[in-house]
Image (tube, rainbow, N blue to C red; front, side, top):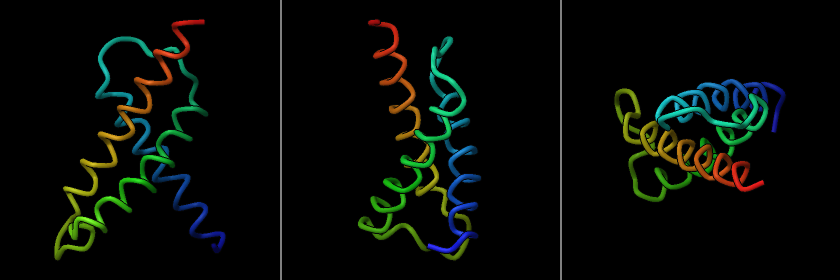
Length: 87
């Protein structure tokens, strides 16, 4: 992976993680770094799911892929928040 790919993954992770965090109602007890990590993982897994479903490459914006990624990020943020709440 080239440096531009790493930077792109971080930027997309920030965006997807933030959008996923906005979808989850209430206050989340996780930090920004965990949000970014959740976003990066959600973006990677969401891209794989979208590619497997055949909706990754469309002629316009990849809305379905983005929705999958944001949904996964929201689930990740929610799961981490629940784990932190138990401590």
